[in-house]
Image (cartoon, rainbow, N blue to C red):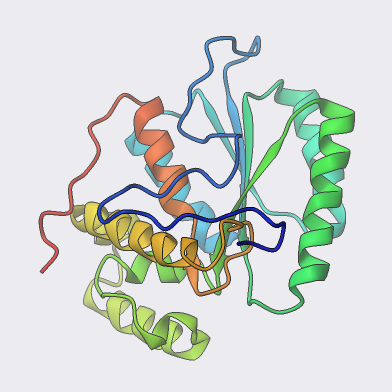
Length: 231
């Protein structure tokens, strides 16, 4: 039973993790806004990677990528972009979170969410990377372990990975193993699901990026990469 009093049933082996709420990332609505586009906010390292992925998937005409502004100006910036380039079908916010001050963090997000819906009639979607975006990159190369929650270890591993091809972009460096990363990230989400069905702010290190990337592949009508290289 979760903190809301709802019964949480364990997943059967191999059963996919259900959506975190009814606002499904993977459901393409049939009635779309006049401008069928999406807005994405992301921190610098994630923004560069995701912009390149948008280009690779040929979604430049549909997805607007923007740097993540400070929390206190996120609402103002969102409303400005909606006025200038909207309306948007969906708005995603990629947010790195250390795991500290969960209640304050949740309240800040819920305030932004409610104000944006009130003023622009759009429900933003939170894509958390705990603790860093680079955890997603390392899941292409390593199985999850105690290092996943350690910022210093993540940074050290990233430095080693970068050393292999210092001139290559993160997407170029990791693309052949995207299916591996998706599988590992989904398995981490499945593990968290056994603890609670409220995964807005993950209780353990992990990321929701697999949800966003799977959604983009469906939007682009691209085959999903398979995790054939997992050993």
